[in-house]
Amino acid sequence: VDQELYTLIQKAKRGDKEAFAQLVTRYKGVVFRQAYAMLNDRMEAEDVSQEAFMKVHASLSKLGSEYAFASWLTRIVSRLCYDRLQRKKQREEKVIWEGIKEQPFSPANHLDIMEHKQLQLSIEEALQELSPEQKMVIILRDIQGFTYDEIADILQVPVGTIKSRLHTARLALRKELTR
Amino acid sequence: MEHVDELISAYLDNELTEAERVLVELHIGTCKECRALVEDFLAMKSQLFTVYQSIEIPDNLEQRVLASLEQKPKTTTRRYTVVPWVLTGSAVTLLLLFMVSLSPLATLSIGLFSSLVTIMVSVLQVVPVFAASLPSLFIGIAGVTVFLLFLLIWSLRRFLLIKIPG
Image (tube, rainbow over all chains, first blue to last red; front, top):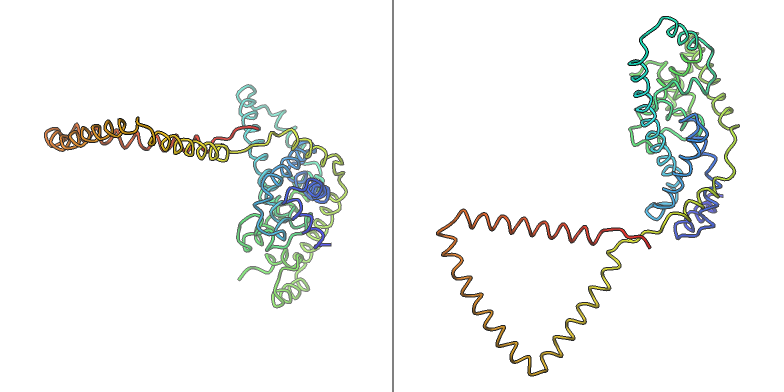
């Protein structure tokens, strides 16, 4: 099966459109799942998936080894997700700041927020409460099934960092689920 | 040395050495809190996998990607379109020079050229004398020349690297 995949990648690298379409079919599940888990929004996850495959098409000829395809693709999706989250955060900060300026603090609003926080969170909601870096390691390990070495390679950080970041992320997720 | 509880994640992911694994297993046998942590982490892992494995994957993604690729105009760099023109231009110039050198006009041109060279040599002899009398002016002119040279090289580079559609 692996050999078949590497042949497919080689063909796509040479510009074979049919082979490229087959690659998209083969990887769209993992790409979409990673993007959706990171962004928690179907539309955004679809956009990121499309953008990721466009990037793959544009720079597939630069990929050194076919064996590195999965890690390379995951790295592309990771970067696109980080960019989206960064932009979203900046937009939200702007909205919050404008909201604060227009509406002074009221005890009623504060109570609403507190009540909302105390509701039991689903695992998807709890995951969204983590930092993008924590979310990413959990997704790559528990949803995508990469090893620590592979995650370190994808995110370009030492294995030791992955090990401790994953543990901290799981503790944070557990806290979100049990509070 | 890390605390044993910090090894629990790596233990569940099968990322420990044999000695570390034994250490964690011995610890879990005696520590109730760490046993609860193992159980919670295991439940979370399995829940995450199940939840995201069951999400619906868009079935038209291939078509969307291929359609976007069709729409995207193909780009090429001017570098490749300029090279043949440079080669053709050089060949035509050489050919013209060759033809002119065979005609009587060539004798006249050579005479004119040698006069020009003589004038240039005289100007070059004057320049050091002039430079010695006005050093600041000379440095200024040299500076401007170097700047213009760099500007020219930069413009040429940009021109060659410019992307054009089609």
